[in-house]
Length: 222
Image 1 (spheres, rainbow, N blue to C red):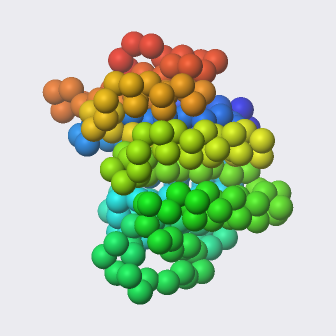
Image 2: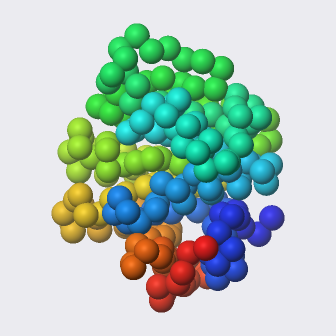
């Protein structure tokens, strides 16, 4: 496999999918479609026999699965085997929430140590089984609401470093409009590639920079 296909033909043709073992930042505002991009990417990776660890910081694991279902993306067959969910949200509304066979429930966005430990353990288990792993963090903007930029930078630096050492592909979602330019630039400096998305006159567009096959002009996403 030369790249991770996203299921968006224009993206996969122009950019060749995502490079394996790289770290990516997916940016755009709420209307840009970055979450839809991540859902379709996750489903495509699973269908391609990859494993996906999906970290949700702004919705519960059940709401996340509803998002897949609403898009006719069938991931149920992969749950607990090649798809794991790390729920860093549910205890903010349901403190008694517990793990299940496909979800690790964490204490909340302030516990970055717990998040890094959970990710390391899940990744290690999947890698021991010889699986190729994709981590998706949706989103680090939510984590930045609870943690200082310096704390987040150190956390992301650790996550990126560990991912590179273990050969895991990692995708971070970020709403750059929520943060100051210096925070955005600091986060951009940690990743290999940046995928920018936007909505313009009812159509979505993308660019890709920082990797071997760049797409620097706004290109229709479809």
